[in-house]
Amino acid sequence: KNEVEQSPQNLTAQEGEFITINCSYSVGISALHWLQQHPGGGIVSLFMLSSGKKKHGRLIATINIQEKHSSLHITASHPRDSAVYICAVSLTDKLIFGTGTRLQVFP
Amino acid sequence: EAQVTQNPRYLITVTGKKLTVTCSQNMNHEYMSWYRQDPGLGLRQIYYSMNVEVTDKGDVPEGYKVSRKEKRNFPLILESPSPNQTSLYFCASSFGQGWFSGYTFGSGTRLTVV
Image (cartoon, rainbow over all chains, first blue to last red; front, side):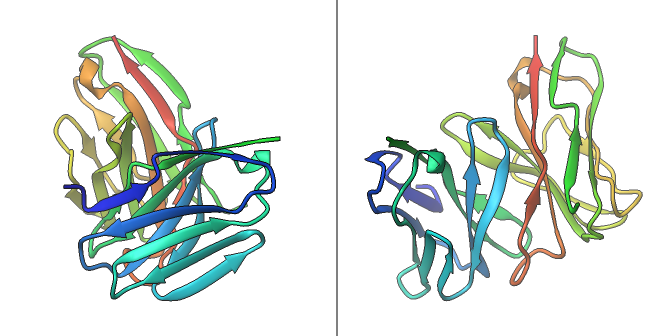
């Protein structure tokens, strides 16, 4: 069983829809990261969370440490949000990554 | 501009021909690491470095070497590349591994070994 599980693996949406991507982990962590990878391949760090909730524009990330679960929400989705979203957890000496959620938003 | 610079972006090489992928950061970050990304497997750590002259193996170190002689540079060396090392490689850096450290990633190097 993977230490970091994401769901769904693939997600399609119409422009304007509210999107939720989930991440569950089974190890003790110091922080959780949400990353975005566009079709060109580059990876951008969206959020780093150790508790509670963070918001940046239309993106919201939450984490529940007791339940070992995090969610990434996108409000009013747009075609430019189409990308792979990756959850990663920080351990003492490394990051462990989920396999990603591929999101496609259609006009 | 704060960034991690990887070179080259694309590389096709033949089995056994030594190659180096360079990684440089301009943020004075202490922690640097290398990952490979393969379909269905996600990103996996190859090697990491907590500071100058301090390196350690990640989850998939076989066939790779690294060095950290200066804080800003962390090259990845494939002494004798094989086709199973065909992958997309990323370098990343942060101030430190753990609690308050966000990561900056390079643009990636797509390596094909034939």
